[in-house]
Length: 241
Length: 241
DNA sequence: GCGAGTTTGTTCTCGTGGTCACAAACTCCG
DNA sequence: CGGAGTTTGTGACCACGAGAACAAACTCGC
Image (cartoon, rainbow over all chains, first blue to last red):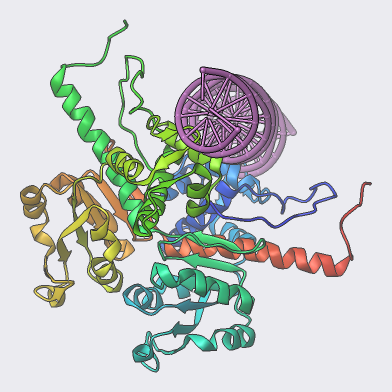
């Protein structure tokens, strides 16, 4: 998924549990965190792995294994303390403090992202909106003034930004990414339908709407094909050559 | 990733190549298709696996293996014909004809999705926009009139819709999904930060912006921790106990 | 204080996916 | 027509992840 090519030396052994969390587990930790937050809002103080797993939509064994990578934060025979586990996961992910984020490309999608409450509510603070097109500049979106793209480096340096969001057309995406990397950003969330080329040490995650739809279309085609076959030759079960 | 729980009988052997394409490959086919389209626009008629692989941002061996699942559409010593391969991939995914799509929840994100050109350009046709809130209804977004959520079943039946997009707040997502399934939709693209519960045979793909950011934050934290360690105890390489 | 019941943490096994390396097959040139 | 060069397709191997099953550890009732 991510293009992590950081050459980790890793000479000594990994004795402490805060190392080497599998990528698949990292991708699920935010889901657990959200489920825990939801439980906390309903004033539920403690929960079992089974309850949390169903709330997160995963297998309970997988959940326990995932949590075991960050340490033993549960109590056998009892379950997990919601607040305590929430904090531990948040600490592991690194969202106990806020991360400054900039968004480049304030079109339809960029505006939607700027207004998205899920960003600010979960450890992220949008510090600047940038757009290269003059008509957008100076306008206020989600309480922030849209600034010219040329201000990128200055803002990144001033606000210590390390995460950038790209929501520009595909043709401009690589240029924006290059500028971000040059400015010192080391994590990019890319919504543009383009393959980004970044140096080692920079993480890129891609969110591609049309790809997701095409994956659904593939499965949908197969379902249709299977249904057709079912009509064609009746039952396809029990045929053992 | 996807929650496919369709019980495929699959009694007979898989002799034809149009079966059993790995999920990881399916997820990459749209990327290849886009890269091929980009090549075709530059009037490039033929390409090698190496060229296509770099355009798609993957390993060339992986690309060849992926393509081999759909058949032998290349020529050894020569490469792949761009148009021919494009068609074969599009046919395999099932985007040679258009898929009707409905979008439920016309907030900021829903409007952005409705205006997103990548949908219509690649085998998808937005046939209706729905919203439960009265103030939105009747308004025109991206050339389509926003209709009341209650019309869902009627539209789905009339237009033979099998793919639905959910861009409503998390609290309403499950209700919308239930209504979609009841109306006959069997593939859902969910942008709401919620876990959806759907019956077997229904595919759900989730796009979650805040989760993506949290994954980036995790790696970012690790980078910072590694850098700190590097400062703390100097070099950590070459320590062989 | 102790046994029954419950729930976590971990080990083992299996399937999936990624990478390497090489044989097969095609083109080009002499 | 044949050999050198090139590129695909695939078999083998390794690593990662998912799931089941079980031991360890905690609570509760008597």
